[in-house]
Image (cartoon, rainbow over all chains, first blue to last red; front, side, top):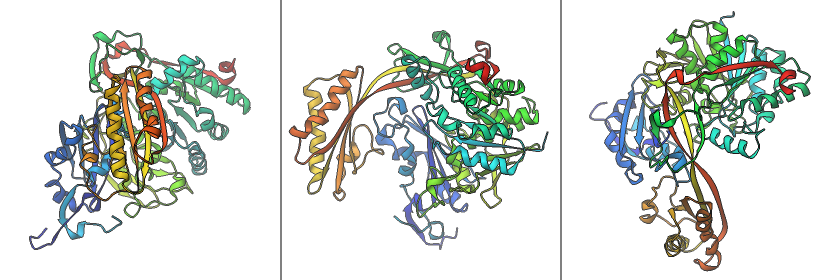
Length: 120
Length: 459
Protein backbone atom coordinates (compact mmCIF):
# COMPACT_ATOMS: atom_id res chain seq x y z
CA UNK A 1 0.00 0.00 0.00
CA UNK A 2 1.55 3.28 -1.03
CA UNK A 3 1.15 6.34 1.17
CA UNK A 4 -0.35 8.22 -1.74
CA UNK A 5 -3.26 5.82 -2.05
CA UNK A 6 -6.62 7.27 -1.08
CA UNK A 7 -8.23 5.66 1.97
CA UNK A 8 -12.00 5.38 2.31
CA UNK A 9 -13.97 4.79 5.50
CA UNK A 10 -16.52 2.02 4.95
CA UNK A 11 -18.31 -0.64 7.01
CA UNK A 12 -16.22 -3.81 7.27
CA UNK A 13 -19.08 -5.49 5.37
CA UNK A 14 -17.79 -3.84 2.18
CA UNK A 15 -14.36 -5.38 2.64
CA UNK A 16 -14.93 -8.75 4.27
CA UNK A 17 -17.45 -11.45 5.04
CA UNK A 18 -17.85 -13.46 8.23
CA UNK A 19 -19.79 -16.03 10.22
CA UNK A 20 -20.66 -16.37 13.90
CA UNK A 21 -20.93 -19.56 15.95
CA UNK A 22 -21.53 -20.18 19.65
CA UNK A 23 -20.32 -22.56 22.34
CA UNK A 24 -21.87 -21.88 25.72
CA UNK A 25 -21.47 -18.21 26.59
CA UNK A 26 -18.62 -17.76 24.11
CA UNK A 27 -18.95 -16.57 20.55
CA UNK A 28 -16.59 -16.97 17.64
CA UNK A 29 -16.74 -14.72 14.61
CA UNK A 30 -14.64 -15.38 11.54
CA UNK A 31 -13.72 -12.48 9.26
CA UNK A 32 -12.40 -13.04 5.73
CA UNK A 33 -11.45 -10.20 3.37
CA UNK A 34 -12.80 -10.61 -0.16
CA UNK A 35 -9.39 -9.46 -1.46
CA UNK A 36 -6.54 -11.31 0.29
CA UNK A 37 -4.51 -8.12 0.02
CA UNK A 38 -6.80 -6.42 2.54
CA UNK A 39 -5.85 -8.84 5.34
CA UNK A 40 -2.77 -6.91 6.45
CA UNK A 41 -4.66 -3.59 6.36
CA UNK A 42 -7.45 -5.03 8.50
CA UNK A 43 -4.99 -6.64 10.93
CA UNK A 44 -4.01 -3.18 12.16
CA UNK A 45 -7.63 -2.12 12.75
CA UNK A 46 -9.51 -5.24 13.86
CA UNK A 47 -7.63 -5.35 17.13
CA UNK A 48 -8.82 -7.30 20.16
CA UNK A 49 -9.44 -3.98 21.94
CA UNK A 50 -11.54 -2.57 19.08
CA UNK A 51 -13.68 -5.71 18.90
CA UNK A 52 -14.12 -5.85 22.67
CA UNK A 53 -15.35 -2.23 22.65
CA UNK A 54 -17.96 -3.18 20.04
CA UNK A 55 -19.46 -5.80 22.37
CA UNK A 56 -19.01 -3.89 25.67
CA UNK A 57 -22.76 -3.12 25.88
CA UNK A 58 -23.41 -6.87 26.07
CA UNK A 59 -20.98 -7.48 28.91
CA UNK A 60 -18.17 -9.05 26.86
CA UNK A 61 -15.13 -9.61 29.08
CA UNK A 62 -12.39 -10.52 26.63
CA UNK A 63 -11.49 -11.06 22.99
CA UNK A 64 -8.83 -13.32 21.51
CA UNK A 65 -7.91 -12.92 17.85
CA UNK A 66 -6.45 -15.89 16.00
CA UNK A 67 -4.71 -15.04 12.74
CA UNK A 68 -4.91 -17.29 9.66
CA UNK A 69 -2.81 -15.43 7.07
CA UNK A 70 -2.86 -18.38 4.64
CA UNK A 71 -6.63 -18.49 4.10
CA UNK A 72 -6.53 -15.48 4.82
CA UNK A 73 -8.87 -14.95 7.77
CA UNK A 74 -9.19 -13.83 11.37
CA UNK A 75 -11.04 -15.75 14.05
CA UNK A 76 -12.30 -13.73 17.02
CA UNK A 77 -13.35 -15.50 20.22
CA UNK A 78 -15.45 -13.22 22.41
CA UNK A 79 -16.01 -14.19 26.06
CA UNK A 80 -19.27 -13.79 28.02
CA UNK A 81 -20.98 -11.93 25.19
CA UNK A 82 -24.13 -14.05 25.06
CA UNK A 83 -25.53 -12.95 28.44
CA UNK A 84 -26.09 -16.55 29.51
CA UNK A 85 -25.67 -18.36 26.19
CA UNK A 86 -28.41 -20.07 24.22
CA UNK A 87 -29.64 -21.72 27.39
CA UNK A 88 -29.82 -18.66 29.63
CA UNK A 89 -30.08 -15.64 27.36
CA UNK A 90 -33.16 -13.44 27.16
CA UNK A 91 -32.03 -12.22 23.75
CA UNK A 92 -34.23 -13.36 20.85
CA UNK A 93 -31.02 -14.61 19.24
CA UNK A 94 -29.71 -16.66 22.12
CA UNK A 95 -27.08 -18.30 19.90
CA UNK A 96 -25.72 -14.88 18.96
CA UNK A 97 -25.74 -15.92 15.32
CA UNK A 98 -26.64 -12.43 14.11
CA UNK A 99 -23.54 -10.98 15.78
CA UNK A 100 -21.29 -11.45 12.76
CA UNK A 101 -23.17 -8.51 11.27
CA UNK A 102 -22.53 -6.31 14.31
CA UNK A 103 -18.81 -6.76 13.67
CA UNK A 104 -19.30 -6.32 9.91
CA UNK A 105 -20.88 -2.94 10.69
CA UNK A 106 -17.63 -1.67 12.22
CA UNK A 107 -16.07 1.24 10.30
CA UNK A 108 -12.65 0.58 8.77
CA UNK A 109 -10.31 2.70 6.63
CA UNK A 110 -8.97 0.89 3.60
CA UNK A 111 -7.61 1.69 0.13
CA UNK A 112 -10.60 2.15 -2.16
CA UNK A 113 -9.72 -0.90 -4.29
CA UNK A 114 -10.49 -3.19 -1.31
CA UNK A 115 -14.02 -1.81 -0.80
CA UNK A 116 -16.74 -3.54 -2.76
CA UNK A 117 -19.70 -1.66 -4.10
CA UNK A 118 -23.07 -3.07 -3.20
CA UNK A 119 -26.39 -2.23 -1.62
CA UNK A 120 -26.12 -0.44 1.73
CA UNK B 1 -11.02 -51.14 -1.66
CA UNK B 2 -11.41 -48.32 -4.13
CA UNK B 3 -9.28 -45.20 -3.93
CA UNK B 4 -12.23 -42.83 -3.68
CA UNK B 5 -15.02 -42.74 -1.13
CA UNK B 6 -17.83 -40.18 -1.01
CA UNK B 7 -19.64 -38.96 2.08
CA UNK B 8 -22.80 -36.90 1.74
CA UNK B 9 -24.56 -34.92 4.45
CA UNK B 10 -28.36 -35.00 4.51
CA UNK B 11 -29.16 -32.91 7.61
CA UNK B 12 -27.23 -30.28 9.56
CA UNK B 13 -29.59 -29.87 12.51
CA UNK B 14 -32.90 -31.08 13.87
CA UNK B 15 -35.28 -28.94 11.86
CA UNK B 16 -33.35 -28.99 8.61
CA UNK B 17 -35.07 -29.28 5.21
CA UNK B 18 -36.62 -32.74 5.02
CA UNK B 19 -36.33 -32.90 1.22
CA UNK B 20 -32.55 -32.48 1.31
CA UNK B 21 -31.53 -36.19 1.22
CA UNK B 22 -33.07 -37.06 -2.20
CA UNK B 23 -30.69 -35.09 -4.45
CA UNK B 24 -27.64 -36.17 -2.40
CA UNK B 25 -28.54 -39.84 -2.78
CA UNK B 26 -29.38 -39.39 -6.49
CA UNK B 27 -25.97 -37.83 -7.05
CA UNK B 28 -24.09 -40.54 -5.17
CA UNK B 29 -25.88 -43.22 -7.21
CA UNK B 30 -25.12 -41.46 -10.52
CA UNK B 31 -21.45 -41.04 -9.65
CA UNK B 32 -21.22 -44.68 -8.57
CA UNK B 33 -18.59 -46.05 -6.24
CA UNK B 34 -18.74 -46.60 -2.50
CA UNK B 35 -20.47 -43.94 -0.44
CA UNK B 36 -22.17 -43.11 2.84
CA UNK B 37 -24.57 -40.40 3.97
CA UNK B 38 -24.90 -38.95 7.43
CA UNK B 39 -27.47 -36.97 9.38
CA UNK B 40 -26.34 -34.61 12.17
CA UNK B 41 -29.45 -33.60 14.08
CA UNK B 42 -28.28 -33.37 17.68
CA UNK B 43 -27.48 -29.87 18.95
CA UNK B 44 -26.17 -29.31 22.46
CA UNK B 45 -29.66 -29.06 23.97
CA UNK B 46 -31.53 -31.29 21.51
CA UNK B 47 -30.78 -34.42 23.52
CA UNK B 48 -32.20 -32.79 26.67
CA UNK B 49 -35.40 -31.84 24.88
CA UNK B 50 -35.55 -35.42 23.57
CA UNK B 51 -35.22 -36.74 27.15
CA UNK B 52 -38.17 -34.57 28.17
CA UNK B 53 -40.12 -36.02 25.22
CA UNK B 54 -39.15 -39.56 26.27
CA UNK B 55 -40.47 -38.88 29.80
CA UNK B 56 -43.85 -38.05 28.30
CA UNK B 57 -43.75 -41.10 25.97
CA UNK B 58 -41.06 -43.79 26.57
CA UNK B 59 -41.29 -44.90 22.91
CA UNK B 60 -40.18 -41.46 21.70
CA UNK B 61 -37.18 -39.21 22.39
CA UNK B 62 -35.55 -39.68 18.97
CA UNK B 63 -35.43 -37.27 16.00
CA UNK B 64 -39.09 -36.43 15.25
CA UNK B 65 -38.52 -36.15 11.47
CA UNK B 66 -36.73 -39.52 11.27
CA UNK B 67 -39.26 -41.34 9.10
CA UNK B 68 -39.87 -38.32 6.90
CA UNK B 69 -36.12 -38.02 6.28
CA UNK B 70 -35.45 -41.71 5.56
CA UNK B 71 -38.56 -42.93 3.79
CA UNK B 72 -37.80 -41.39 0.37
CA UNK B 73 -34.23 -42.70 0.26
CA UNK B 74 -33.89 -45.89 2.31
CA UNK B 75 -34.73 -48.31 -0.52
CA UNK B 76 -32.35 -46.62 -2.98
CA UNK B 77 -29.52 -46.51 -0.42
CA UNK B 78 -29.89 -50.22 0.26
CA UNK B 79 -30.06 -51.07 -3.46
CA UNK B 80 -26.85 -49.13 -4.15
CA UNK B 81 -24.89 -50.01 -1.02
CA UNK B 82 -24.94 -46.49 0.43
CA UNK B 83 -24.43 -46.62 4.19
CA UNK B 84 -26.65 -44.41 6.36
CA UNK B 85 -25.33 -43.01 9.66
CA UNK B 86 -27.13 -40.59 11.95
CA UNK B 87 -27.27 -39.34 15.52
CA UNK B 88 -31.05 -39.35 15.11
CA UNK B 89 -31.24 -41.71 18.06
CA UNK B 90 -31.02 -38.66 20.37
CA UNK B 91 -32.21 -39.82 23.81
CA UNK B 92 -33.54 -43.13 22.50
CA UNK B 93 -31.37 -44.88 19.87
CA UNK B 94 -33.18 -48.25 20.29
CA UNK B 95 -36.50 -46.41 19.76
CA UNK B 96 -35.15 -44.85 16.55
CA UNK B 97 -33.89 -48.26 15.39
CA UNK B 98 -37.38 -49.66 15.90
CA UNK B 99 -38.89 -46.93 13.73
CA UNK B 100 -36.33 -47.62 10.99
CA UNK B 101 -36.96 -51.37 11.28
CA UNK B 102 -40.69 -50.90 10.83
CA UNK B 103 -40.09 -48.60 7.87
CA UNK B 104 -37.77 -51.23 6.35
CA UNK B 105 -40.41 -53.94 6.73
CA UNK B 106 -42.95 -51.69 5.05
CA UNK B 107 -40.51 -51.15 2.16
CA UNK B 108 -39.88 -54.91 1.85
CA UNK B 109 -36.41 -54.84 3.45
CA UNK B 110 -36.64 -57.33 6.35
CA UNK B 111 -32.95 -58.22 6.09
CA UNK B 112 -31.75 -54.61 6.49
CA UNK B 113 -28.98 -54.64 9.09
CA UNK B 114 -29.36 -51.85 11.64
CA UNK B 115 -26.64 -50.96 14.14
CA UNK B 116 -27.32 -49.16 17.40
CA UNK B 117 -24.50 -47.42 19.26
CA UNK B 118 -24.84 -47.25 23.04
CA UNK B 119 -22.85 -45.92 25.96
CA UNK B 120 -23.15 -42.15 25.55
CA UNK B 121 -25.72 -41.78 28.36
CA UNK B 122 -23.76 -41.11 31.55
CA UNK B 123 -26.53 -40.04 33.95
CA UNK B 124 -25.33 -42.76 36.33
CA UNK B 125 -21.94 -41.08 36.90
CA UNK B 126 -21.26 -39.09 40.06
CA UNK B 127 -20.89 -35.55 38.72
CA UNK B 128 -19.39 -34.22 41.94
CA UNK B 129 -16.13 -36.10 41.34
CA UNK B 130 -15.81 -34.99 37.69
CA UNK B 131 -13.75 -32.15 36.30
CA UNK B 132 -15.87 -29.21 35.09
CA UNK B 133 -14.98 -28.17 31.56
CA UNK B 134 -17.24 -25.23 30.79
CA UNK B 135 -20.55 -24.01 32.13
CA UNK B 136 -23.27 -21.54 31.31
CA UNK B 137 -22.78 -18.28 33.15
CA UNK B 138 -24.40 -18.09 36.56
CA UNK B 139 -25.29 -21.77 36.48
CA UNK B 140 -26.44 -22.96 39.87
CA UNK B 141 -26.30 -26.71 39.30
CA UNK B 142 -27.49 -27.39 42.83
CA UNK B 143 -30.97 -26.13 42.05
CA UNK B 144 -31.67 -27.84 38.75
CA UNK B 145 -32.65 -31.44 38.21
CA UNK B 146 -30.46 -33.35 35.71
CA UNK B 147 -32.37 -33.84 32.46
CA UNK B 148 -29.65 -35.48 30.37
CA UNK B 149 -25.96 -36.35 30.57
CA UNK B 150 -24.20 -37.55 27.46
CA UNK B 151 -20.59 -38.17 26.53
CA UNK B 152 -19.32 -37.37 23.06
CA UNK B 153 -18.43 -40.85 21.77
CA UNK B 154 -15.75 -41.32 19.12
CA UNK B 155 -16.14 -42.89 15.68
CA UNK B 156 -15.00 -46.27 17.00
CA UNK B 157 -18.36 -47.81 17.95
CA UNK B 158 -19.81 -46.74 14.58
CA UNK B 159 -16.92 -48.46 12.79
CA UNK B 160 -17.55 -51.54 14.93
CA UNK B 161 -21.17 -51.56 13.76
CA UNK B 162 -20.09 -51.20 10.12
CA UNK B 163 -17.66 -54.11 10.55
CA UNK B 164 -20.57 -56.18 11.82
CA UNK B 165 -22.34 -55.44 8.54
CA UNK B 166 -24.66 -52.60 9.59
CA UNK B 167 -26.21 -50.76 6.63
CA UNK B 168 -27.81 -48.15 8.87
CA UNK B 169 -26.16 -46.96 12.11
CA UNK B 170 -28.14 -45.10 14.77
CA UNK B 171 -26.27 -43.19 17.45
CA UNK B 172 -27.07 -40.84 20.30
CA UNK B 173 -24.38 -38.30 21.23
CA UNK B 174 -21.12 -38.72 19.34
CA UNK B 175 -18.63 -36.20 18.05
CA UNK B 176 -20.37 -34.62 15.04
CA UNK B 177 -17.37 -35.11 12.70
CA UNK B 178 -17.14 -38.75 13.88
CA UNK B 179 -20.32 -39.50 11.90
CA UNK B 180 -18.43 -38.81 8.64
CA UNK B 181 -15.07 -40.15 9.79
CA UNK B 182 -16.43 -43.60 10.66
CA UNK B 183 -17.33 -44.80 7.12
CA UNK B 184 -13.97 -43.48 5.85
CA UNK B 185 -12.02 -45.42 8.48
CA UNK B 186 -14.13 -48.47 7.69
CA UNK B 187 -13.55 -48.16 3.94
CA UNK B 188 -9.87 -47.24 3.86
CA UNK B 189 -8.84 -49.19 6.95
CA UNK B 190 -7.02 -46.16 8.39
CA UNK B 191 -5.23 -46.76 11.69
CA UNK B 192 -6.69 -44.79 14.61
CA UNK B 193 -3.28 -43.20 15.20
CA UNK B 194 -2.72 -42.23 11.56
CA UNK B 195 -3.42 -38.69 12.78
CA UNK B 196 -3.16 -37.01 9.41
CA UNK B 197 -5.77 -39.29 7.82
CA UNK B 198 -8.02 -39.18 10.88
CA UNK B 199 -7.72 -35.39 10.76
CA UNK B 200 -8.68 -35.25 7.08
CA UNK B 201 -11.71 -37.47 7.64
CA UNK B 202 -12.71 -35.40 10.67
CA UNK B 203 -12.25 -32.14 8.77
CA UNK B 204 -14.53 -33.52 6.06
CA UNK B 205 -17.07 -34.21 8.79
CA UNK B 206 -16.62 -30.74 10.30
CA UNK B 207 -17.14 -29.07 6.92
CA UNK B 208 -20.24 -31.16 6.17
CA UNK B 209 -21.91 -31.49 9.56
CA UNK B 210 -23.97 -28.30 9.21
CA UNK B 211 -25.39 -29.35 5.85
CA UNK B 212 -26.12 -26.37 3.60
CA UNK B 213 -23.81 -24.08 5.59
CA UNK B 214 -20.99 -25.21 3.29
CA UNK B 215 -23.08 -24.95 0.10
CA UNK B 216 -24.45 -21.42 0.42
CA UNK B 217 -26.84 -21.57 3.36
CA UNK B 218 -26.15 -19.08 6.19
CA UNK B 219 -23.86 -17.39 3.62
CA UNK B 220 -26.24 -15.79 1.13
CA UNK B 221 -26.00 -11.97 1.37
CA UNK B 222 -27.80 -10.42 -1.63
CA UNK B 223 -25.61 -8.07 -3.64
CA UNK B 224 -22.46 -9.26 -1.86
CA UNK B 225 -22.59 -13.04 -1.73
CA UNK B 226 -25.27 -14.21 -4.14
CA UNK B 227 -26.14 -17.86 -4.66
CA UNK B 228 -28.23 -19.62 -7.32
CA UNK B 229 -31.71 -20.88 -6.40
CA UNK B 230 -31.59 -20.28 -2.62
CA UNK B 231 -34.84 -22.19 -2.08
CA UNK B 232 -33.22 -25.40 -3.38
CA UNK B 233 -29.74 -25.44 -1.90
CA UNK B 234 -28.01 -28.75 -2.55
CA UNK B 235 -26.51 -30.51 0.44
CA UNK B 236 -22.78 -31.23 0.50
CA UNK B 237 -20.72 -34.21 -0.60
CA UNK B 238 -17.07 -34.80 0.34
CA UNK B 239 -14.84 -36.78 -2.01
CA UNK B 240 -12.07 -38.39 -0.02
CA UNK B 241 -9.19 -40.18 -1.69
CA UNK B 242 -7.06 -42.93 -0.16
CA UNK B 243 -4.07 -40.57 -0.16
CA UNK B 244 -6.01 -37.98 1.84
CA UNK B 245 -7.02 -35.66 -0.99
CA UNK B 246 -10.28 -33.94 -0.01
CA UNK B 247 -12.73 -32.17 -2.32
CA UNK B 248 -15.98 -30.55 -1.14
CA UNK B 249 -18.83 -30.49 -3.65
CA UNK B 250 -22.63 -30.79 -3.57
CA UNK B 251 -25.68 -32.59 -4.93
CA UNK B 252 -26.21 -32.22 -8.70
CA UNK B 253 -28.96 -30.06 -10.22
CA UNK B 254 -29.54 -28.10 -7.01
CA UNK B 255 -29.14 -24.50 -5.93
CA UNK B 256 -26.46 -23.02 -3.72
CA UNK B 257 -22.76 -23.14 -4.46
CA UNK B 258 -19.41 -24.41 -3.26
CA UNK B 259 -16.58 -21.86 -3.52
CA UNK B 260 -13.56 -21.03 -1.35
CA UNK B 261 -15.45 -18.23 0.45
CA UNK B 262 -18.20 -20.46 1.77
CA UNK B 263 -15.77 -23.26 2.64
CA UNK B 264 -13.69 -20.77 4.67
CA UNK B 265 -16.77 -19.64 6.58
CA UNK B 266 -17.64 -23.22 7.52
CA UNK B 267 -14.04 -24.22 8.25
CA UNK B 268 -13.96 -21.66 11.08
CA UNK B 269 -17.56 -22.17 12.23
CA UNK B 270 -17.75 -22.79 15.99
CA UNK B 271 -13.95 -23.00 16.16
CA UNK B 272 -11.92 -21.30 18.85
CA UNK B 273 -8.16 -21.86 18.52
CA UNK B 274 -7.81 -22.98 14.87
CA UNK B 275 -4.54 -24.74 15.77
CA UNK B 276 -6.30 -26.89 18.34
CA UNK B 277 -9.80 -28.04 17.45
CA UNK B 278 -10.72 -31.04 19.58
CA UNK B 279 -12.91 -33.94 18.50
CA UNK B 280 -13.17 -37.30 20.30
CA UNK B 281 -10.98 -38.80 17.55
CA UNK B 282 -8.20 -36.26 16.92
CA UNK B 283 -6.82 -32.79 17.61
CA UNK B 284 -7.16 -30.78 14.40
CA UNK B 285 -4.92 -27.95 13.23
CA UNK B 286 -6.44 -25.73 10.51
CA UNK B 287 -3.68 -23.09 10.46
CA UNK B 288 -2.01 -24.66 7.40
CA UNK B 289 -5.19 -25.08 5.37
CA UNK B 290 -5.31 -23.80 1.80
CA UNK B 291 -8.23 -23.99 -0.60
CA UNK B 292 -8.21 -24.44 -4.36
CA UNK B 293 -11.23 -23.63 -6.49
CA UNK B 294 -11.53 -26.46 -9.03
CA UNK B 295 -14.62 -24.85 -10.58
CA UNK B 296 -18.11 -26.32 -11.02
CA UNK B 297 -18.83 -26.26 -7.27
CA UNK B 298 -15.69 -28.14 -6.31
CA UNK B 299 -13.13 -26.93 -3.76
CA UNK B 300 -10.04 -28.87 -2.79
CA UNK B 301 -9.00 -28.60 0.86
CA UNK B 302 -5.29 -29.15 1.61
CA UNK B 303 -2.95 -28.72 4.56
CA UNK B 304 -5.10 -30.25 7.32
CA UNK B 305 -2.91 -31.46 10.17
CA UNK B 306 -3.76 -33.72 13.08
CA UNK B 307 -2.39 -34.82 16.43
CA UNK B 308 -3.38 -37.25 19.16
CA UNK B 309 -6.97 -37.25 20.35
CA UNK B 310 -7.69 -35.52 23.67
CA UNK B 311 -6.94 -37.75 26.67
CA UNK B 312 -10.30 -36.93 28.28
CA UNK B 313 -13.81 -37.28 26.90
CA UNK B 314 -16.24 -34.36 26.98
CA UNK B 315 -19.71 -34.91 28.39
CA UNK B 316 -22.51 -32.36 28.42
CA UNK B 317 -24.99 -32.38 31.26
CA UNK B 318 -28.31 -30.57 30.87
CA UNK B 319 -30.18 -29.30 33.91
CA UNK B 320 -33.70 -28.03 34.34
CA UNK B 321 -33.25 -24.27 33.90
CA UNK B 322 -36.60 -22.79 34.93
CA UNK B 323 -38.87 -20.96 32.50
CA UNK B 324 -38.74 -18.32 29.78
CA UNK B 325 -41.77 -16.04 29.45
CA UNK B 326 -42.25 -13.84 26.37
CA UNK B 327 -44.92 -11.30 25.45
CA UNK B 328 -45.02 -9.09 22.35
CA UNK B 329 -47.15 -6.21 21.03
CA UNK B 330 -46.83 -4.01 17.92
CA UNK B 331 -47.11 -0.23 17.43
CA UNK B 332 -47.11 1.41 13.98
CA UNK B 333 -47.52 4.79 12.32
CA UNK B 334 -47.12 8.31 13.73
CA UNK B 335 -45.30 8.55 17.07
CA UNK B 336 -44.90 4.74 17.23
CA UNK B 337 -41.39 5.12 18.66
CA UNK B 338 -42.66 7.12 21.66
CA UNK B 339 -45.62 4.77 22.15
CA UNK B 340 -43.35 1.69 21.98
CA UNK B 341 -40.90 3.20 24.47
CA UNK B 342 -43.78 4.04 26.78
CA UNK B 343 -45.09 0.47 26.51
CA UNK B 344 -41.62 -0.87 27.40
CA UNK B 345 -41.44 1.35 30.48
CA UNK B 346 -44.96 0.38 31.55
CA UNK B 347 -44.12 -3.34 31.23
CA UNK B 348 -41.05 -3.01 33.45
CA UNK B 349 -42.98 -0.92 35.99
CA UNK B 350 -45.77 -3.51 36.08
CA UNK B 351 -43.27 -6.27 36.94
CA UNK B 352 -42.03 -4.12 39.84
CA UNK B 353 -45.55 -3.33 41.07
CA UNK B 354 -46.56 -6.99 41.01
CA UNK B 355 -43.27 -8.07 42.64
CA UNK B 356 -42.95 -11.00 40.22
CA UNK B 357 -39.79 -13.07 40.80
CA UNK B 358 -38.41 -12.65 37.27
CA UNK B 359 -35.38 -11.26 35.41
CA UNK B 360 -36.69 -9.05 32.57
CA UNK B 361 -35.43 -7.68 29.28
CA UNK B 362 -37.26 -5.50 26.76
CA UNK B 363 -36.57 -5.19 23.03
CA UNK B 364 -37.89 -2.73 20.46
CA UNK B 365 -37.87 -4.92 17.38
CA UNK B 366 -37.50 -2.65 14.36
CA UNK B 367 -35.35 -0.22 16.34
CA UNK B 368 -32.77 -2.64 17.67
CA UNK B 369 -33.09 -6.02 19.32
CA UNK B 370 -30.75 -8.94 18.66
CA UNK B 371 -27.63 -6.73 18.73
CA UNK B 372 -28.67 -5.02 21.95
CA UNK B 373 -27.75 -6.02 25.50
CA UNK B 374 -30.13 -6.96 28.30
CA UNK B 375 -30.07 -3.35 29.59
CA UNK B 376 -31.60 -2.08 26.34
CA UNK B 377 -28.98 0.67 26.15
CA UNK B 378 -29.16 0.77 22.36
CA UNK B 379 -32.88 1.30 21.95
CA UNK B 380 -32.96 3.68 24.89
CA UNK B 381 -30.31 5.89 23.24
CA UNK B 382 -31.64 5.48 19.68
CA UNK B 383 -32.05 8.85 17.94
CA UNK B 384 -32.39 7.76 14.31
CA UNK B 385 -35.44 8.16 12.09
CA UNK B 386 -38.69 6.67 13.39
CA UNK B 387 -39.40 3.21 11.91
CA UNK B 388 -42.81 2.51 10.36
CA UNK B 389 -43.59 -0.14 12.91
CA UNK B 390 -42.07 -1.51 16.07
CA UNK B 391 -42.69 -4.70 17.99
CA UNK B 392 -42.18 -4.44 21.74
CA UNK B 393 -40.94 -7.70 23.23
CA UNK B 394 -40.76 -8.52 26.92
CA UNK B 395 -38.71 -11.58 27.88
CA UNK B 396 -38.28 -12.88 31.43
CA UNK B 397 -36.53 -15.78 33.09
CA UNK B 398 -38.32 -17.26 36.07
CA UNK B 399 -38.07 -20.26 38.37
CA UNK B 400 -41.71 -21.20 37.93
CA UNK B 401 -43.95 -21.41 34.88
CA UNK B 402 -46.58 -19.35 36.71
CA UNK B 403 -44.25 -16.39 37.27
CA UNK B 404 -43.10 -16.56 33.64
CA UNK B 405 -46.72 -16.68 32.46
CA UNK B 406 -47.89 -13.85 34.71
CA UNK B 407 -45.06 -11.63 33.46
CA UNK B 408 -45.73 -12.49 29.81
CA UNK B 409 -49.44 -11.73 30.27
CA UNK B 410 -48.53 -8.14 31.16
CA UNK B 411 -47.97 -7.69 27.41
CA UNK B 412 -51.51 -9.00 26.83
CA UNK B 413 -52.91 -6.48 29.33
CA UNK B 414 -51.43 -3.66 27.23
CA UNK B 415 -54.32 -4.17 24.79
CA UNK B 416 -56.66 -2.21 27.06
CA UNK B 417 -54.26 -0.60 29.53
CA UNK B 418 -51.28 0.37 27.37
CA UNK B 419 -50.42 3.20 24.95
CA UNK B 420 -52.70 3.89 21.99
CA UNK B 421 -52.95 1.57 19.00
CA UNK B 422 -51.16 -1.53 20.30
CA UNK B 423 -52.01 -4.74 18.44
CA UNK B 424 -50.98 -8.29 17.59
CA UNK B 425 -50.17 -9.59 21.07
CA UNK B 426 -48.60 -13.03 21.39
CA UNK B 427 -47.39 -14.52 24.65
CA UNK B 428 -45.96 -17.87 25.69
CA UNK B 429 -43.85 -19.75 28.19
CA UNK B 430 -41.03 -22.19 27.36
CA UNK B 431 -39.11 -24.54 29.67
CA UNK B 432 -35.39 -23.82 29.78
CA UNK B 433 -32.38 -26.11 29.84
CA UNK B 434 -28.97 -25.18 31.23
CA UNK B 435 -25.81 -27.04 30.36
CA UNK B 436 -22.48 -27.80 31.94
CA UNK B 437 -19.66 -29.79 30.37
CA UNK B 438 -17.43 -32.22 32.23
CA UNK B 439 -14.31 -34.14 31.33
CA UNK B 440 -14.42 -37.90 31.79
CA UNK B 441 -11.66 -40.48 31.81
CA UNK B 442 -12.05 -42.99 28.96
CA UNK B 443 -12.47 -45.77 31.55
CA UNK B 444 -15.65 -44.04 32.81
CA UNK B 445 -17.27 -45.11 29.55
CA UNK B 446 -18.12 -48.44 27.97
CA UNK B 447 -19.36 -47.62 24.47
CA UNK B 448 -20.44 -50.38 22.14
CA UNK B 449 -22.92 -51.37 19.48
CA UNK B 450 -25.42 -54.04 18.59
CA UNK B 451 -26.42 -55.03 15.07
CA UNK B 452 -29.57 -56.89 14.08
CA UNK B 453 -31.92 -57.20 11.12
CA UNK B 454 -35.01 -55.06 10.67
CA UNK B 455 -37.15 -58.17 11.13
CA UNK B 456 -35.35 -58.94 14.41
CA UNK B 457 -35.60 -55.39 15.77
CA UNK B 458 -39.22 -54.81 14.78
CA UNK B 459 -40.43 -57.81 16.82
